[in-house]
Image (cartoon, rainbow, N blue to C red):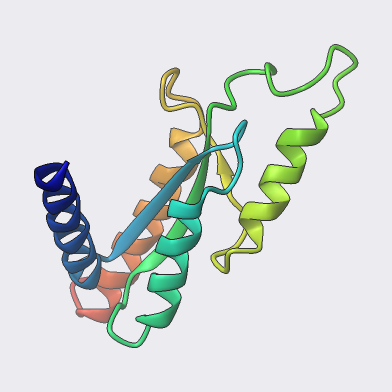
Length: 127
């Protein structure tokens, strides 16, 4: 009801404020479902406010554990590939396939974080 909507608005407000002060924003979506209205709206907001946000935005395609997202012959499931293509069009590059449940793809995120740390340390003259 009313309390839930008010709480959701506050959560969104806090999230958007955090985005303004973050170095990295991870947008995660269910690759088996595709780009939702929420993801589209968030991406639109991030693009619209990009002058106030100095964050790097990375899209994570979740639920792509092992080879479950491919057919037996090794070819990718068409719907998942369409969802990945759709996600690449929201304006933040190619999505990184991950499985949050199984920890797959986390090394790719770690590489991004390490690169960002190195770049920031260089910018701040800490190297």
